[in-house]
Image 1 (tube, rainbow, N blue to C red):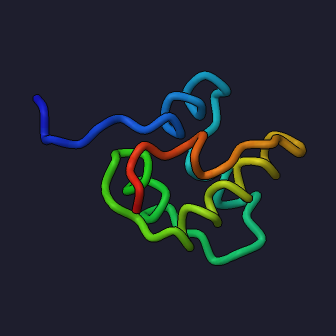
Image 2: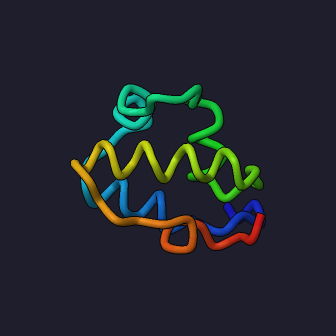
Length: 77
């Protein structure tokens, strides 16, 4: 079933690292929701602001990773 959405590098990385949406929401010091994160993982359009929140939360969850929006998202917002 192809819904026209492209799997994002964020989704693949989270699966490889066994991270859940809840892990990132808990690590975020900002208002990041499960719904925003799920949309981003599925390849739906999210704003650059939300992408930034996700990047910061992921890096916090990994203990200081160096991922950027370009590393984690295929779409150009």
